[in-house]
Image (cartoon, rainbow, N blue to C red; front, side, top):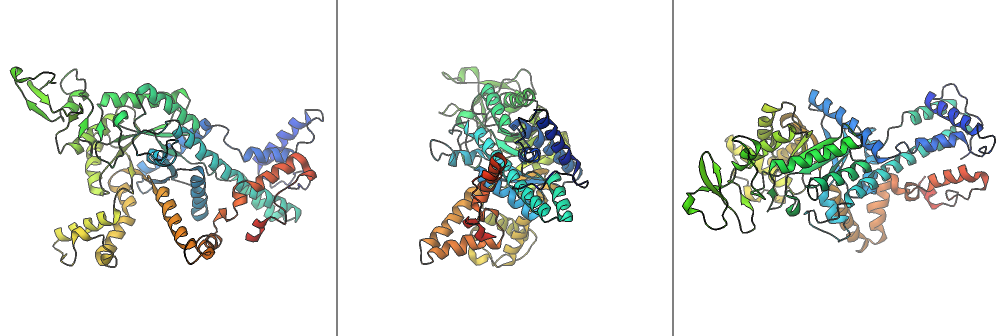
Length: 543
């Protein structure tokens, strides 16, 4: 990169000019020993590394989330979204794509799924979502995600700096002014991450220690669930076991202490309840007086009334309403809840969480149904009017079948003829072009907006989308490349599409940092720099 003399144009953004001047004064103060340092190059490198630490990121992104939460309270159409990512490159390409298509990252976040960490990032190899993976892999992935997002900033700014030098060389003042404004107003790729801490990977102290590592890596929002940590299950699998509120709330406080200790005073805690699908509890809650939180939790236990003489050896009994009752205990030493109490337990869980320091709620459901979610949120909002949800638009749901069945049921209830449809077989391709399928697809399209408006959903996420897209795209490539298409399978199915659709990583050397490395080489060695981006670089074939 060649600089065309001192930076003097009056129309240059003030902050950029001032930073260059400040660095120039610092260099001058070293009595000639730093004269080989270019002050503008220093400023450029600083701009390309806006965030020095993960805590800088956590504070910055927490403020974004708080602002977005307030905006949603005022207007529920301003909900937020994210896609789950399992690698820094995937996160980077997602945010580059968002900036390309929408020119802004506003209200678009990242989600870090414990499921994908277990399945894709554990040293044990692929694992189920049962908190068996190394807990250190979670903060390591947060750090990786932000490393790639910061690199996206550096790459994009590097391109602007190169264009600026070209404009100066061509003495194009208008273009120079335009580029300086773009540099000054550059929007970072760094956005909030909602990070899955599972059930805390242990007791409250273990939760606190992990929370600190995650926050130090950059996480501004921690999502913690009320399952037992040593028997934790995926939210869409059977066998889920919850813990009493006092156990869970100790972990919520541990997360808050971690935020406050590290100076991220407005960090966000998302409390997830799995009670809708959890029929078991690990332990009976401690209750000190009728009607307290422990008593309310125990009220959901499935119990049989007993008399003192009927109590067998080793059996556990409690009092309820002045009567002696025996909770139903399984051979696993877990206790059973009364059937049909899941929604009531969810409501209690959510109210208790918000009253004890949580900021956002997550209710894990077995299907995507706006009115089911709203039926619980309405009850929560009777106590806490501004309660808001993070909702899992899960790939574990068969969205097509669920929504076709919802439309079928609505039509049938309205007296509409549904004789042409087999409710149990609505996933069939035979129905893809029918009016019922079209209405179901429209409901899927508007699900997020409808849920935000009706059910208090502030943030919509898909936990595992890039797990599935990686598998799908790889399957398509393998089918073509190893089949009759041969090399055309890659060229037509991948590279040509990259070129036509303006996918940045078609220039993979540039994406990996080759041009930035050349810039640094020139900063460090001047004309003696041996650069990779010359005329013989094959990436020049892509323009």
